[in-house]
Image (cartoon, rainbow over all chains, first blue to last red):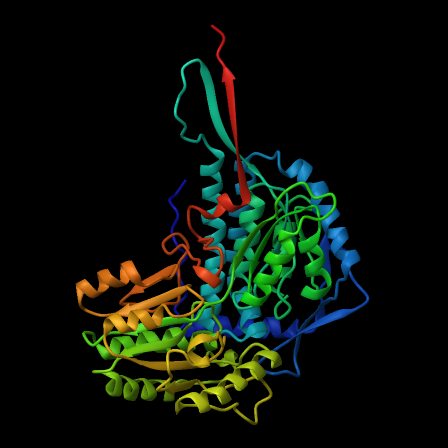
Length: 210
Length: 306
């Protein structure tokens, strides 16, 4: 495996790259205002109440309509995470790390689109948005490698007459509450770190970015 | 939106159902419920100090049926300083301060919200700083302007309130107003000079495009001022003096210290990120210790039969 390296930021001073980003912005603009469900146990779930995500640069524009979950929905998510933990905790670290590597590759392909959503939803300029997306990719690539390290043989002092080892186990169900200001990088990093270790997650983003 | 995109990507690549559950809710409704749930094993939080402390308090109380101590990982706020020494290139320092204070409108926990300047260069520095800030463009981010709007009506109100406090506490050098006539939450990049180290503008996290300039007697005094908050996330020092850099390494009490560069922009792997004191649990995201926060170790010992 290649050593970890940071993703390189795009150079938006080059007109053709800036143009590509603008085109991606136009494309996501066409998708403004759609409704997005919760995802609980792999199922799309909607609630009666809704939460609108507004463009801070033009408050007449709704970026997307999201759900407004209550305690019952939270309980469903908890039960789903608890059930999934029973099998997920036994998946080998290497296989769990592969999900992170795969996700990083999908994000690389969708980079300009993801930047465009962030520019629209929280008001980042192009480079700030791209740095956020790059950081998300970095977290996935870095934590996947880290998981392989923690999943491997751990150094321990030998004792005569005993075969000794120390292994790392996951904790259980985690509640992950990321912030709105690095709406992709930190959300991805916090979630991926918990998941790759074998935990299952209830992810509840901050209320300013869904 | 971004949580939805990530959850969809994970579903697309075949992550088993139930491993990642995505839920949009207010903190008061579902957040508290999940934090207090007896089956919750850990809480990983990044956000304000107020919410972080509340989570820590709620999580500390064992609920009926709970059989563990919940682990809380919390990355909270900052009141981050850049100390500008007399022995430095003022132009370079101004550039670093402007980028760290006004990048993404100052809405980073690592943002520079206080610049502490040696009295011998104070006037020269503030003049150059004011000029650089006056040249910043604020516009709709689709135009790729350096600054855009702040994130919400709530954020705008809170920042404008701090700007009013600043007008009482210091001398306004730049900005100081909401930008009218736009259909968004635009605030002028704002700088206040002559802020006392104990003023509210020097102590409280604003999370917006507002920078306080504080005068120091000397480098020692600058470091003391930098350390005088309840936070300890990021900090930077600009000086060409090696001995002063060494002192900063030892005495500047922050989780992420930057020498002769700006205090924002930590990279995964190279700049493990997390702060001291009320900035949180120093979790060091993007570093080698981070995954340990979500793991527990088990020792296994087998007797070898002769």
